[in-house]
Length: 103
Ligand code: FES
Image (cartoon, rainbow, N blue to C red; front, side):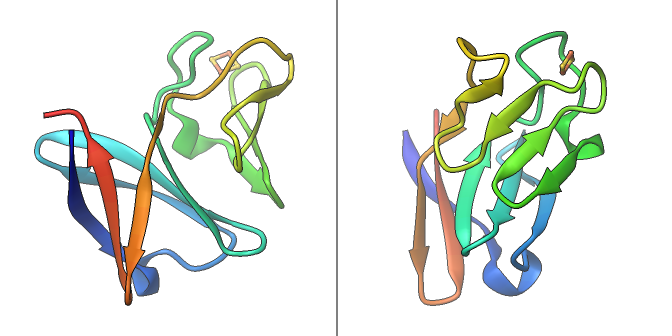
């Protein structure tokens, strides 16, 4: 694992989510309400739909396929519970966002 630059805060405004690629890996970056910046695998843990096609409402990300919902702060499923997004650690240095990805 190592932290790698993935985007800047200018690339990801509060209330937005985007997929960025680093080192051949796609990462879903989310800047949720309150400036909560998180990084996730971009694929839903239910049936592998692209989460970027979902909606972000406050801290809740809803998958477009079957409407499973996840808390962006923790990555935990809120509807249903008992599931979670694959999350990566995020570090912000000045305006630069870095993500800790597997090598
Ligand atoms: S694939 Fe995401 S809820 Fe079913």
